[in-house]
Length: 195
Ligand SMILES: [Zn+2]
Image (tube, rainbow, N blue to C red; front, top):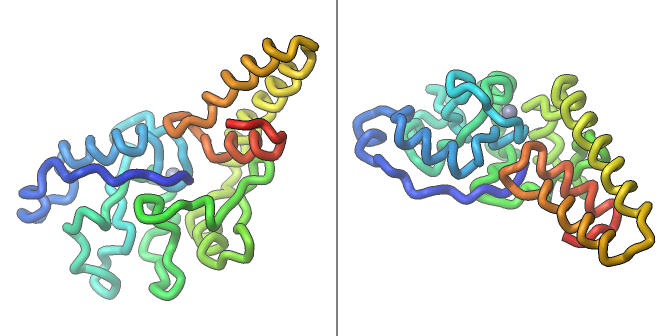
């Protein structure tokens, strides 16, 4: 999960008319998240698998008044959306990547996500949304293992200029449009590689 910037709502009229799934609004959220799930950072390949996520659940006993409020909408995959369902504790809200920087609450060690510095919200977000579910672990492990091989390859040259150029280009993998970019960023930091 990485910090996202909430785009302006292209079609506020649709929300006023009770439609939170309008194609233009969904597209704006998709672009702001680089086509990735706001929670697990998986690329959502099929539009059918993308959900307009209510950050605070719209269920009748939760926050029905926020069903058509732009600041409560996000872009998520169907699996994170399904895991979360209507679980939500008002005193311990899940991390909202549009409103705060997730880095304050969660950190990757390798391909496993951990709560940071005792963050209960980080812990609950990881557990309830299944952010260490087996298929994510598998995808991230493959990506991080390849990435570490690439880092090590950079250090096999004695030419410092070449090495620094190679490391710098590896840094591109931590850009926000890349899948699992936060795991990559944490790996770069763990290896003392400047961004
Ligand atoms: Zn997801």
